Length: 231
Image (cartoon, rainbow, N blue to C red; front, side):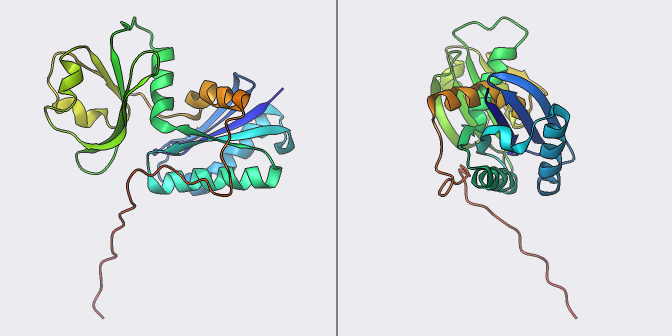
């Protein structure tokens, strides 16, 4: 029996899930937005309490490594590394876009032709998104990148097949009017989506070095300067 705790903080949703081997036991989420630092330990405590599982029973921590929110990723990875150190258990890292695509393909309630492409997107600044493209076998057709969207984005793929756009950045892609562009709303990141990928990595012992692991930010953090006030 292997309990794996999954943490997803790459977007505005703070989400934690508990697996027993490859079976999802429970999920706790906060949709308050920008409250990850104050919510994540509370959600983990409630998750384990409700499942009647103690921290010492955990076999690994899986964390969504990004891309995504700079602050959210730091909160998730810092929490994961702290638990790994304290419990002396391994750290598993899951690409956020891969997790989003994997779950979408597995749980879609409509028939998906095998020739289609799948493009998970996370909202970034202005008209920019974090995105990648996968086929139905989860082969990476286009690597994870930060991309500025315009009317001609993804035309090379759209000319040959349908492309499904989903995730928090899909709204920005609706300026694409190609008939092969398919937009699926309300597909969100969740720790539950990480379950199969996390268990597969656990089985393979595909672990990170918790001492040196850093989130996959993709872009440097850009802060804003506080406005000055005159005395």
